[in-house]
Image 1: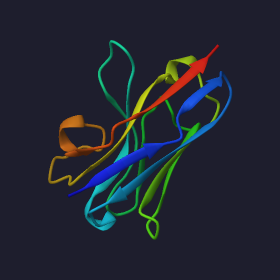
Image 2 (image 1 turned 180 degrees about the vertical axis):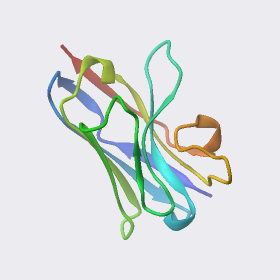
Image 3 (image 1 turned 90 degrees about the vertical axis):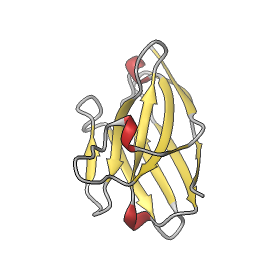
Image 4 (image 1 turned 90 degrees about the horizontal axis):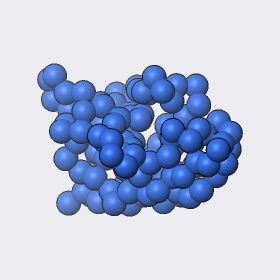
Length: 125
């Protein structure tokens, strides 16, 4: 059974930084794409960043150059370092893992079968 537990959310002013962590258990990193999604009130959940099973990283255009995704396989932990935060980054952030078969997409919610409970990030102007 895959379990994902996020931590590290909070409130910060515009331009500030926050780091998120996702502790994973019950699966092997090498077989899964693991990443971060976010969902703001009234909006659809969207992909933020992900690490493919081959180690390559993916980012949404809106966060490129500001967010960095990384993982520590020894600790089974995924990270998201968020810098230069903007009010539009305010959302619930979710860690997710999925086995992306042919045609799968790192940013498609339906391709991820395992989700954490989410952690809130609030950026004030």
